[in-house]
Image (cartoon, rainbow over all chains, first blue to last red):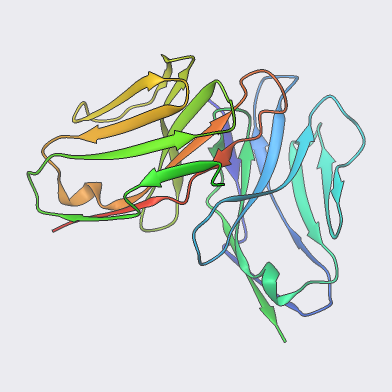
Length: 110
Length: 113
């Protein structure tokens, strides 16, 4: 069975600085999708970024980028120029059945 | 125009009651899902329907019964509610073949007293 591990229950970052959230996963598949979702206090789940395993190039969406290491089964999220609106729970998730990690609470300090 | 909608957003009920949560998507997707988020924010898939056919049925008590009358709707009926059913239930939809991105509804917070 696929598993997803987020080892950082909580992270803090100063506004305008950069933070990296960690995620590792376990799968025997060779082709799959990985996602980062954001859940602000409104509880709405919002897709932040998506990575296809067969693509070697790391996905980027504006201030959000990933470091995808397929052999190491690692999928970290980097948030640059952090903003107050980035404060939320961040979930790493695997594939279409969306196996979720336990989440990382990100706090942004002004 | 809301992409994935759920009703109700909040549901408070007594133990032993039966309740339903409705979900509708207007994205033209062929696959819909139900997830449960517990008090520790852990998210777990419960069910998934593809073109009205059940394709994912995780280990869920049979008091929970999904029903998909058409591709745009997926309802969740819960019988004999228990305290442990208190959670936020999310509906989501996606196109089965493609980017696999799931679009989530706003969630339904169920509180069982």
